[in-house]
Image 1 (tube, rainbow, N blue to C red):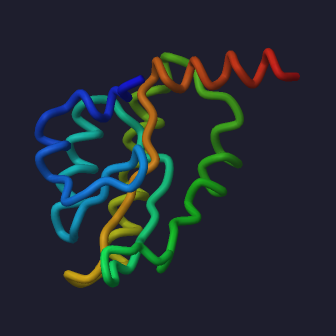
Image 2 (image 1 turned 90 degrees about the horizontal axis):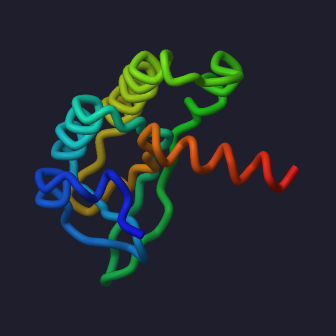
Image 3 (image 1 turned 90 degrees about the vertical axis):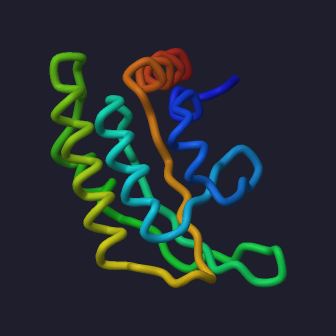
Length: 128
């Protein structure tokens, strides 16, 4: 199934490749992708950085702001979603600014729209 993130043409146009089902983005274009996510109410839940060598990707770093967000946002409701998106995405941008990678690196974003977030919550509840 296509994610809501993938429904935004400008985001797909910014991608320089795809690993499995995840698009990857160069610096500084990844910052524009995060901005587009915010405008489209899509939360960036995490950032991963990969070194590209000989057409292979090697993990180079990842964000940890999800720990801070999880402690603060024990439960997210529809009325909170816009604020949740803004806070996550500000931290994602901050992470990228603190970890600017060169041309031999790409960024992968873990994202979720409200619809997708709700589906995940329903699955978790059913598994409990």
